[in-house]
Image (cartoon, rainbow, N blue to C red; front, side, top):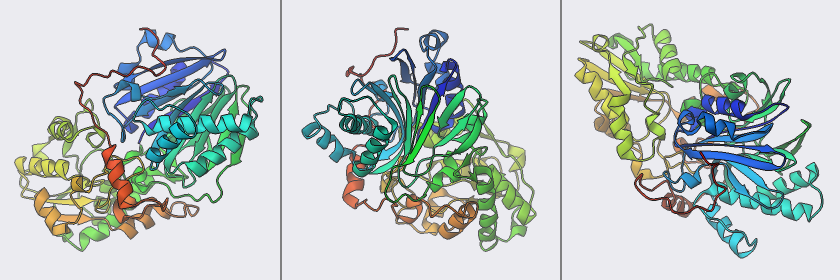
Length: 499
């Protein structure tokens, strides 16, 4: 999961892209990057860290031009601590292309071999995004064959990319001297939308990045569709996949996206309200409401579900945990030790809301179980008599291969365990999960055009239809690694501008 943005405007875009990345910061905290173009020259700055830390005034001044791209990175493959694997990525031929990517390629290993042996292209990092960039560059080179670039050539290239690349991908690329290209995988697993203003056109992962920068949401980019925005602002679009079908990642609605976003015409906030309504029925069948004194959300993604559940059960809704907003989202921190250490730094209990009460804690999901165990203990330490835990999502039982950091079964507390076994590990008095069908109905009812969801981490069904246990093992071998103290010695990417 990453956050991406691209803009073609009639005014400088550096501040606009910075502001959009701040609005997408929840999608990635590991690294950030911006590239702009002026007179066919790219200007780039990227580094590890949060947006506000990566970009200083001197960096912003070195990013001139009226079109550009940006990304916030949440790594699921490669090295979490390699500054070089921050995006955008760059190749100088054909034309000069920079690219940002949200998603995860499931056949990156095979493509990397193809690129070396057949396409004669060099990949210098472990990032699947660099692989994707080189596949795109090679296909554009084939379709143009030395002639001036036309939108139809770009769409033909994207059609060939769809045939070669497997997995999830929302992509924005800037082609020097021509414009911005965006496309989405044929299943629409990762989100991408387009907006307009009097100044120009913007593309971004979530609608909140459009609205927060003064752009009007226009529509979602369709699964398999490519959109090309020329430097004069002309927008070209074409469907480039043979059999596109909308199957967005359901975990976007459960946890990843901001609640004020609308994705694939589904309000994330309303989706979470619906999950709370469905979860309420499950709670009643497990714990009688008269045995619950108060409903407390585990901030922040679970708040809408918890509020709706409390309302339907006629129970008080209280804020029992205070969040330290200066600690990042623990789910997307690279490394379990970092994640565990941050839980109590991130949350603090208000003892008066727990003391002597039977509390129902509501979380958006339970992935590894370590955070849930800590929070249940915090509630007990604050004086709770009984602690019940409800999850607005079903048990996470299977690896995810499409860009969410839960690839190994051994890390998932629900894998090959019963609900009772999970309850004992977490230490709560009762554990209530959403069911898979209930989750799909709750969210799918908001858009009849959604044919299904990628809910693979819940039901084990991989919508691309090409995932085997061998694929999962290979992806695990290439999952995020590295140590903060490791020296990053490779330096062949387009360099940052001098600070």
